[in-house]
Length: 191
Image (cartoon, rainbow, N blue to C red; front, top):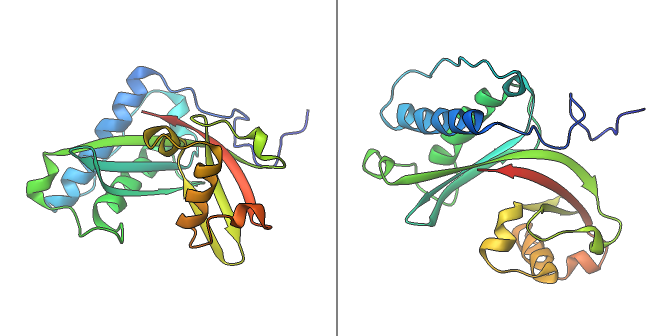
């Protein structure tokens, strides 16, 4: 059987992380942010779970009191998952253009959410999109926007509203999805 070109190394849609590996990755993210805000050297990674060696894209979301404080990620990675998580956690704390860099006083107040990305697939018909399971990418010309799967459920968005919000994130008119914009979907393991 030939692998889909969008599939990752092991051919699975999502890594299927154990509870222990999820906790390890949350600890990696928190420690990476702590070392960034307190200007300490980067951490070393030690793990036994072979799934963590996979090259998975990931987003790290930081919140304070349920308000977004930073979210950066990548769809693909050429690094093992802990390294990707650490890098995205620091970028979320330091480089999200919507926020000033995270301060030391804010560090103790952050909550962290990780989204490990599945493969990206073209959407031929919007009925293929499942709210709560699928994230969206909409592209038209040089503009593109991405919303993680949990955005739709956190904001009680129906399908059309989710599509429109993804268009707006791309800097496109909210109905661009009806007028030739490329629509892609992906799943994510969120914890």
